[in-house]
Image (cartoon, rainbow, N blue to C red):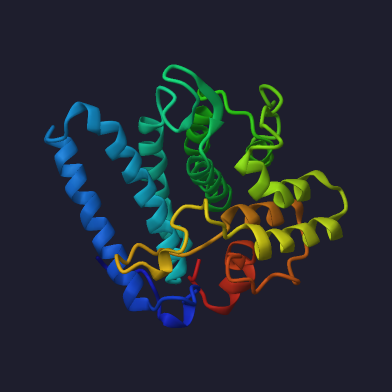
Length: 273
C-alpha cells in the first residue's frame, strides 16, 4: 500500500507510532481484499454474507480512524467512506443492528456499537463534504430502520436543512446506554448558550466518550494490533456546526481538532488536506 502521509510530523495519535498504523492499514486492506474476492467468487455461504459485509463496513471505518491517526490526507478518506457506507447499506437490513427484544420483536433503536458507527459515518459525511447521494445513503438507512435520534437529526439537518424528523425519540430514559453516554453532547446541541455548550462538550470528552461500551474499547492494549485510534468525530461535527469555542478542550486526546481547523492547518502545510 502506498503511503499517504507526508511525514510523521503530522501524526495525530499519541499511543502508537507511524509504523504501527502503516502495518495496521496494510493488514486491514489485505483482509478486505480477500473478503471481496470471496464475495465476488460466491465462496461465502448465504447466511454469512450479511455478517461479512457488516464486518467489512466496520473495517472501512477503522481504516478511516487509522489514516486520521497517522496524519493522512482527509481527501484520501473519501473512497473508504464510500465503500464503508455502501456495505453498511447492504448489511443493516431486516432489523439487523436493532435492539432484539424477543425472537420476532425489535425496538426501533440501534445497539450502542451500531449507533456509534452510524453516528461517526454521519459526522464524517458532514466533514468530508461527500455527495448528496452518499449522505442520503446514511439517511435512508436510518429511515428504513425507523430510527429517531436527536443527535443524528442535528447532523443531518446541517446538510439537509429542510429535513423533518419522522417521530419523537423513544429511548428509555432510565435504561438507555445511548442516552447515558451521549447525554452531555446531546445537551450541547440543545442549548443556545455557546459557552455552556462548550463546557458540556469538554465534560463529554473528559468523562463520557471513552467508555466500556464503545467500539474497540481498550484496544490499544490488545496484542492483536486492532487499535486504530479513539476519535470523537461526532464532537468535532457538533463544534463545527454550532461554531463553538473549542480552546478549553482543543488538545483533548479524543478530539479530532484538525477536522474543525482545516483552513489554518492547510495554510501551514500546503496539501495537508
